[in-house]
Structures are given as C-alpha cells and as structure tokens.
Length: 282
Image 1 (cartoon, one colour):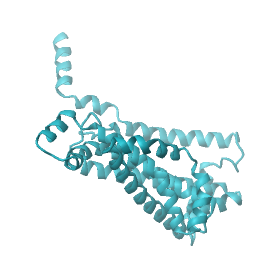
Image 2 (cartoon, rainbow, N blue to C red; image 1 turned 90 degrees about the horizontal axis):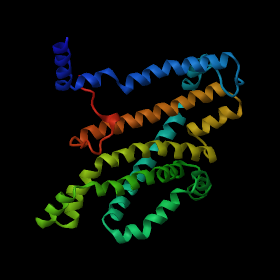
Image 3 (cartoon, one colour; image 1 turned 90 degrees about the vertical axis):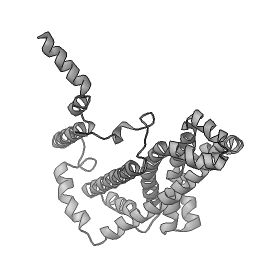
Image 4 (cartoon, rainbow, N blue to C red; image 1 turned 30 degrees about the vertical axis):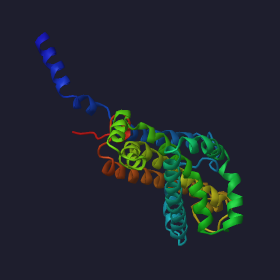
C-alpha cells in the first residue's frame, strides 16, 4: 500500500497538469448559470418582487424576438457600437500616450498625476450634459464621453506597468549606450504590456458604460436611448433583453482583447500574468 501511495504521489509531482484538470473556473461559471436561472425563476414565481421590477425568465425569453427583430434595433445597436469603438480607440490612445509621457519623466508625473487622478473622481453623469452642449446629440459627443470613461484605466495601467521592467535589464541597456527612448520602447513597454492589456479590458467595459450613460442624458438613437423608451413604457422584459445585450457586448470585448493579448504578449511572465488568461493545457 505504501508503495502504491508513493507511486501516486510521484506521478502527481511529475504531472502537475492533473491538479489543473480537477478544477476549472470556467466549469464553475457554467454551473452557476443554471443556478442563477433557477433562483430567478423561484423568486418571480413566489412574487417576492413585482413583475415590473423583476420579470420572469419566460417573459424575458419571449421578448427577445420582439426586441431583436424590430426594424430599428439594428440602427440603435450599430450606433452604440460605433460610439463605443470610437471612444475606446480615442481614450486608449490618449491614455497610453500620456502614460508613456508621464512614465518617462518624474517631473511631469509629479506635476500632472494628481490632477489627472482628481479628474477621474468627477462622475460621468455630470460631464455628459457639458459634452452634449459642446458636441451635440450626434455620435461625436457620445464617443468623447466613452473616451473619457475609458481613458484613466489605460493611463494608470500604462504608467504602473512601465515600472515593472527588471532593474538589471535597465542597467544593462544603459551600459550598452541605449538612449532613454530606446530603453522605453524596447524594454519598459514590452514589460508593461501584460498590465496594459488589463487596463484595455477594463477600459473597454467602461467605454461601453460611458456611451450608454451619455445616451441616457441625451440622444436620438442608441441602445441606451432605446432602454429609456422601454423603461418609460414599463416594458421591463424588453429592458432586460437590452441589459443582456450589454452583457454580450462586454463579454465579447473581453474575449477579443484576451485573444489579442495571447497573440501579442506571447512572452508574458508569470509574475505579472493573470490567472484567467492562462492556458488550460490537456
């Protein structure tokens, strides 16, 4: 018996993948989904909340063809997607460039980091009316609002990630005569990429929030505008269908950026990697 136990322990040590196969967070998430549906169904059947506040799963499912099949849904969805993509591209670019600028200069970082952090504390709902007054009710204002919403996440992760470069590697490049720009682009930025991609994932979700909030405040199209119409007419099941659409958009953005990270940051170090992106080799 002791020999068999020793052999089993040695096999486990030699094959660490066995432990990884036992528990997978994706399987746990998949198991939670039907449990959530069951709780949702029981709560609505017991009428704990009024159907206007919480419709049943069957009411939401029957509303999906009505909402997604309407003539104007494609127009509203494309409007929100364009605003989100444009805002994310603008906010991520500005955040990345400012992160590089402040990360390469301690003087600029000391001077402007407190001000940029203070601006992040201003609620987006307060800024939205001003943006609308400046840019109007079109796509431009919503894209700017989405850019403001996602800017800080990319900026602060870029700024933080630049400090992850190995000090010995920095000293080696300096001893070889590399300039500050060469050290930044060839060492500091590649070392910061895993963290920057985390900021991009967070920025993508906040860009969606920024676009939808701006549509709440004032818009003539978009999923946020459509959600307000359903809510004002007390069509709660249709409003929940749009909420599910927001979830799908957020998950899609997360998966796309994760896919890009796995292809671009193929040298990712385990010291700064995120467990949700680790491969589950079988």
